[in-house]
Structures are given as C-alpha cells and as structure tokens.
Amino acid sequence: MSHGQGLRRPRSQSHGFLIAHGSWVISAMTASKSIPASWSPPKLGEVKLNFDGALFASSSEVGLGVIARDSAGACIWWKSVCKQGMYEPEMVEAFAAREAILLALRFGWRRIIIEGDSANLLLKLSAPSPDCSVLGPIVRDIKLLASGFDQCLFSLVRRSGNKIAHCLARRASVFASEGSCVSPELSKLLFLEPD
Image (cartoon, rainbow, N blue to C red; front, side, top):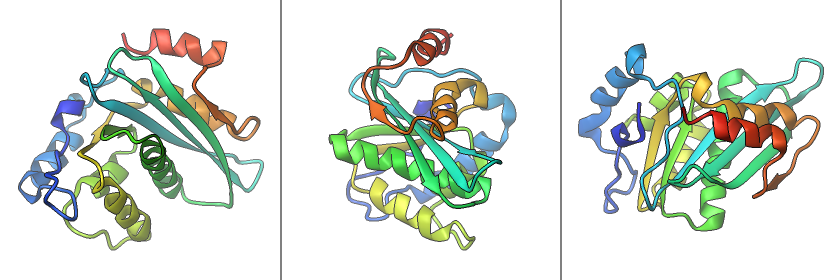
C-alpha cells in the first residue's frame, strides 16, 4: 500500500480511524500485487517512519529498528533499540511500530506515515474495531498515540522496501544507538532503496 492509500484520521475523531475505509484497507493490503516492493518518499511536509523488529536466537533479546525520512528521502533520524525478553515475532514488530510513533512524538512531527512489512500488525492498526488478541494492549496504545497527530497513516511495504529498518533492528544486539548521521553501510542502502 502506498502512503497515499492509508487511512487519514480526522482530527475530531477520538480513536483516530475512519470506519468506512476499514474493509478497503484490508482488501488492499491482502492483495499482494498491490504492496510496493520498494520504498517511496512521503509527500512534502510528511515524515515517513519505517520500522522493523528482529529476534536474536542466541540470546533473550530482540532488536527494534526505526528510520525517519523526509520527502527527499533524506534520513532525519534513526534508532536501534535492544529490548530484553523473548517475544513472538508479531509482538516484536508491534514494539518497533510503537517506537516509531514515540520517535515522531518526541520530535514533534505532525504528519506521519508509519510503514512496515508486517501485514497482520498493520491490519490490526488500521482496523476500527478493538483487537482482542494478545497484541490488543499494544495495538490500543499505538492507536491512542496515533490519534494525537494531524495525520497518521499506516502503510505496508514488502521486506525489500524496508531494508534499512531491518538492518537497524538486526544491529541493535551489537550497537543500540540513535542519531541523524548514518553509517556507510546504511548510507549505501539509502541510495539503493528508493529505486
């Protein structure tokens, strides 16, 4: 789903999502040929935050990666977080999505796109109804945080379009940090990804 196909939240709605578009989002996200394979920049005035999670088999830790970029594709901020505990993959993705929202709040960005490659999680975040799964509390928390923005869209991209967030999540076990300058490894991906 491209960033223009997400749900736009009217400021007056307290829970943040348009019920009328719920079924459209589900059908668009599940039709695999409509999911973009590469990263695309947000519109001018928007910030796109890509997120991903990683499980580390050799330890009881997980990695969370977030990269925020502007309409020119330039990195505004990135973050790698190492979190203690053993979690299911979908929960790790949810932690990473929440980390992206918290980063946007911290920097005061008002028009954001939260993009990842976890279709099931993004369906839950886009659904107008409450989630009754084990993810329910964190999904509810993310939706509540999202309701505070002028615009918060949830967008699905294939893993190939989420490489930098994936790389940041993987490296969290070795180097959990954040910043605006990217390493040569990530810089290479920044130039290759928007194709």
